[in-house]
Length: 78
Ligand SMILES: [Zn+2]
Image (cartoon, rainbow, N blue to C red; front, side, top):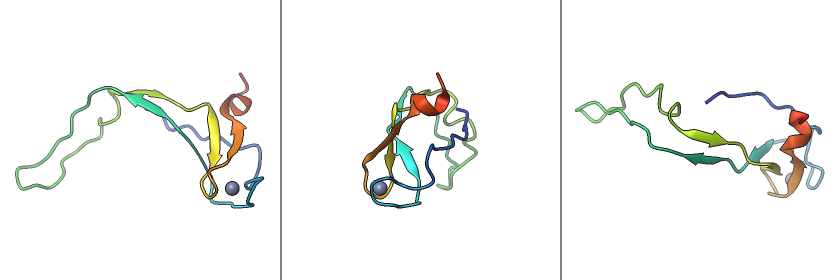
C-alpha cells in the first residue's frame, strides 16, 4: 500500500470550518498475516498491508462534521 499525499482543494471544511482534515471511506479486501511472539508481544508486521487490495473512496468527508467535501477524482485530476 502506498501512502500518497493528496492535497485537498480547500484549507478547512466548507461546512463547519474545521481544520482537522478529511477522510475517505476506503475499501480493503484480502487476507494477511499478523505476526506475534510467543510472549504475546507484537512481532514485525511490515508487510501487513501489502497483500491487501486497497481501493480509495471516491468522496472525501470532513473529520469533524462528516459532511461531503469534495470528490477524490477532482484531486487526482483524472
Ligand atoms: Zn466540517
